[in-house]
Image 1 (cartoon, helix red, strand yellow):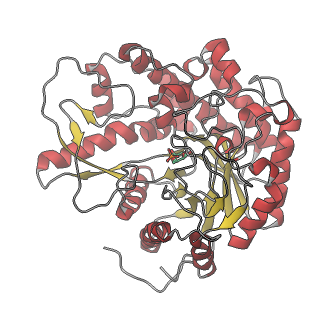
Image 2 (cartoon, rainbow, N blue to C red):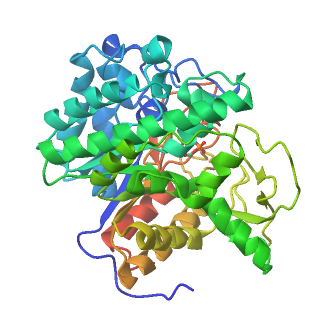
Image 3 (cartoon, rainbow, N blue to C red):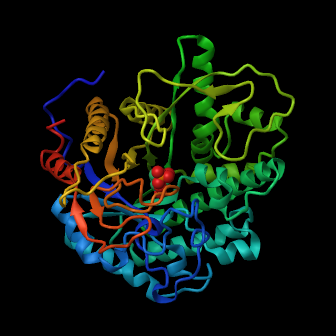
Length: 467
Ligand code: BGP
């Protein structure tokens, strides 16, 4: 239970906000940029694509001014890989100018940059050439990008995020640049190989970052979906535990232990899916583990046991809501859901912090947390009190973690400004700042502070004493 405390967050705790390049920058034809696997991807014809997005590229100074007005102490952003290496290999110096400028502006405004090296935006040319992450060759290309960034920004950027939501990348074929038409069998094996390549690439980036910038902090952003038990039945409690082991601990175990848990190994073996980690990989990864875990936290999932016996053990390729013989998701009468069906559970954030710290003993950084909603602009105002309530309750839980002694570096609200949602265009907004455009109409792209902006500004000012 949350116990209200008059204490605020400690002075070193960073209040921040986040975005990602493809969702916010726009201007895809800028300065010889190459093509990414997301450029022509669209989930639905009615949704906005990423070509203009929030036009952050052309509103950079105004947007950083808004960050400063908000009182942000940290800003998490990602670079566009194909702006910097259009074909994945050849440097396009001009593509770096935008990030040079952004970082300069952040530092001038005393905002700590948190730089994500790779956030879904994989170069199309590398997928065409060798399949992208599914080939070992991808490791050298990722490291080329990482090394360039470490060297260029070594005196400016202390916090680095290696890979955003690797778990999501390997579970969703188009995030790997692969078509959906693969048979389950091929895809599951392919995804495992990609997972190992990405994990090795991350470990190499960590090694290099520590060599080039000794006082840096580097880690991944993972998306733990905390499982709640569907009933007090012990079987459902076990199912909830297995859900977490199979859907997110497998990833963090790979990062910290260089191998999967016994349960996950058994899961793969029973389905005839390869486990691609070799002893050599395991040794290397264990020597180069993350300094922190970035947590993208949005929701919980309530699960109960599934006792159906199936001989064909393969589930569907896209994110699963059931695993035969293990778990299935179920309704939770205690929790509300967002319009997109995401279970809202602030306590889940506290559980994520406690569980991940207890398992790996490294600090945590909340790299994303927020509520997607259909905000409406009425008389130049956005009354997003539902978002205030969401952020308030999650920050309360986080404050409790901090006061209990869990090492939490900071909190980045998702998102600083409205941006194109990963799968729902502009109709699912997350920003503290409204961008005046819709899915089909660009309008004037004006920036308008939402009610949540003013609330977060006050919360930062009070360092969370108001929570
Ligand atoms: C995370 C991604 C973000 C963002 C967020 C919200 O998985 O890192 O890029 O998209 O989820 O998701 P969505 O936009 O699909 O609501």
